[in-house]
Image (cartoon, rainbow, N blue to C red; front, side):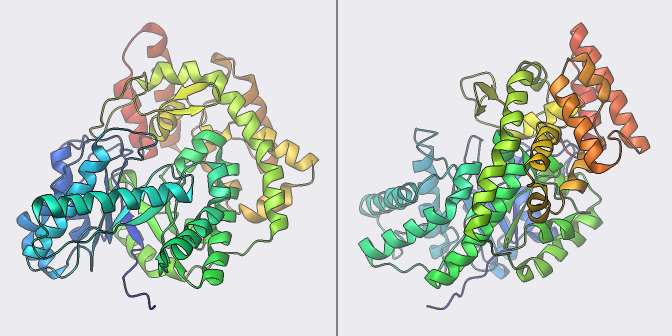
Length: 499
């Protein structure tokens, strides 16, 4: 069966990582009711081909399609959602977030289908959902079955009004290094179950590889190596099953969360060749000059579909599995040691969007080893605000062991931008922080990394030096009990991202 739908090269998200105020708003905090206008403007002005509407752990406007088609009807008549432009719900995973939010998301999808049908649109506006923290084919199938049940119940209870779509397509989001490594097998099992049990042949898949959360849990080197393996496996699976696979990745601006900026789009697309959709987060859109943002979006749309993945052998997987603990173990040891520091400063990180409140210190938190941490943006923001970029945690000790075991060459072959990544992160290092907090392990990492790079880490430009001065003030204010939020925000604006 021929693939007919358009695959977006750009998906804009609601990640709350911007430091500056959006160009269309008078304040940096984006309230839920502002997101409707944001969605329209990103489509109309910024080159978004797809918008991700995030139900996972945040407040969301449930009547988004009705309001878009009502308020901006002239635009969406010419650019129909579901045909030329796309809106994709990121729904809660019921294994993680129980309750009725998933059901509410499904009812919003169904009601939007009826609304669009009655308004004369030929295709349903919403037909895919992102499933976070996917760990198995069974989870993907369970969500589809749940949607089918709710769709049938809604049709019986309220009537189909001439239109009733009972299927939803799943975009599985893989969020840990281990799950990313086995994601190719998960997809293959999913395809086989659909074929064997239901006689259904899938035309395409859009696997979604997380970038921030695996880094939060395992560090940047294990994350990058796992992604390279996954992209290779998807390409081989596509050929084996004779389907199209269009991988998605969601990088942030700072290197720890991916390092995608308007200035690094070419480097990023080459590093992660094989990706077909890039998720453009808030800091990319709002912390850089609008001209360079628009130019970069056009570059992504033009060039991303042309980048082909590198195919790797099973021997490379064995090498990757050998190498990952070199970096992951010292990274996690460091995280467990600095967790109290992160806890102390994270409460002062400026918020940028409305989130659902959850029980617990960090709300919708993540676990690393024995400790709870804020989500990736808050964690990254906390580390940078203390002058200790998390890209460096455990990386030096990992490099040392990789050299000893003669594995450094394969790392450099797979992770071509490792050196520039460490250099960029290192510009926001404040070495005095290491001594003030007694972080001897990170001091060891820094020494090894500097030897590896052949240069000293630390600020180079006037802006980076000012950032270091702000970090010193933040630390002083923490010690004497003064709220450092103003200085945290100023530093974030200098590095062009909250976290």
